[in-house]
Image (cartoon, rainbow over all chains, first blue to last red; front, side, top):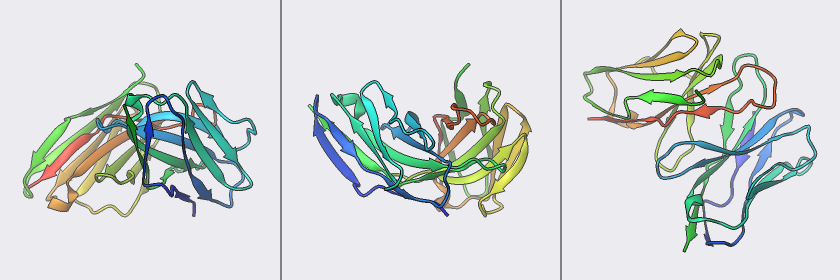
Length: 116
Length: 115
């Protein structure tokens, strides 16, 4: 069974600064996918960034980037130039391809607050 | 059309009522999911449909009954719910192919309150 751990229940950052959210996971699989989802107060789940385990290059999406360390089973999210709209719950998630319909395993989440 | 829609947005029901939640997507995705989410917690998987067939049931009580009438539509029928079933119910869909676009797309959810 896969597990995902987010060790920071809450974090805060000043607007325009950089913050890093941590995520570790445990699996015996070699091929898998990792995601960061954002859930603002509206509670709409929004994909922030994805990483395929077979790709060594770290994914980036504008101000969002990941530090993927496969051997250490670590997948942290860096948010640069934080904006007020980044205030949200952030979930790290793990997925392997399954014929029955590939489920996501979520971490417990990190509540990020961006202060003006 | 690149979104998952859910209706209703809010639902209040008594413990003896029967109601249904609806989820729709027109992206050609062949896997669809129901999740239950309590406040400040991650979503919990309830059901997965693959090619309109129920492929995963996470031991959900029978008062929740899923249905997938066609590849675009997913329903969740509710009957004799308990107050502890009050939560946000999220629907998601996913392309059923081994590709780089393999993430789940979530709908906005239905906030359910059981009185």
